[in-house]
Image 1 (cartoon, rainbow, N blue to C red):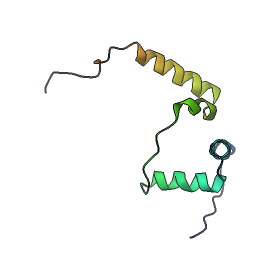
Image 2: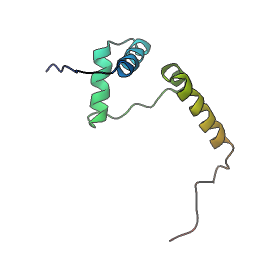
Image 3: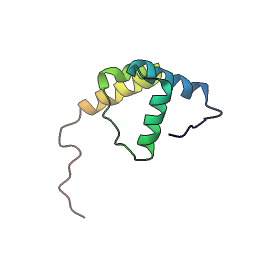
Length: 86
């Protein structure tokens, strides 16, 4: 297996990787490698455990997600289905 050195990683990116690694109980290198594999299509993206999503998001992102979900819950179930054909 080859080594990869990432330079100029922003503090925000490093913090996100650190949070993901600590929540998964895996080394940060393992999490970064898995995210790279997913990004280039070598492994399917794993479904997000929504119960843990709030732990990873920043406060403003979390609030925006809550508001978006609340807005979507108010829509009828068939609101995205159209019967019109073009």
